[in-house]
Length: 146
Image 1: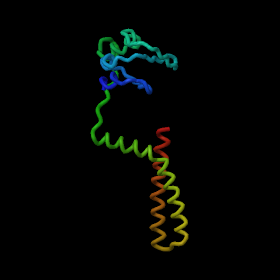
Image 2 (image 1 turned 135 degrees about the vertical axis):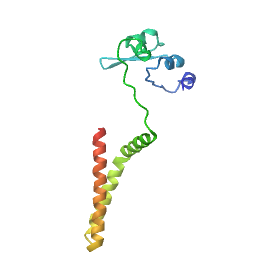
Image 3 (image 1 turned 90 degrees about the vertical axis):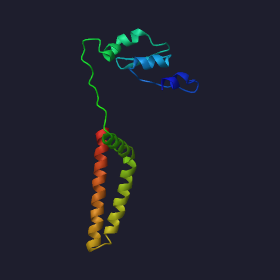
Image 4 (image 1 turned 135 degrees about the horizontal axis):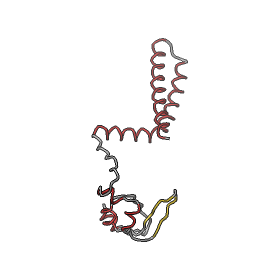
């Protein structure tokens, strides 16, 4: 990846990389450095230098050479957890369209129920209940991420 970034021409745009990996940054050879201070981004046209790493104690934490406790190590997700995360991301992305579709389907079914009787009506009511449950699930999912 660093080789591809290093060889990119940069004439038609920019690539923004956020990294605390000193070796990676050194291998790319960035020509601009951004720092955040008091909520403001300061962008400088220059190479990285050693003080960039010392300013935030990044190098020391990465190598464990200071007395501060190491940052918590995130465990790698299992394939099942990765699949579940992927499914959830897709569900969140598609939720607004699916909610709109469900609303249309419920409205159509409710009109249809006015013409039905007996077992057919009960089956349509069950369909509407399932659609409403999915709608509520999607709304809760969207509320969770906003």
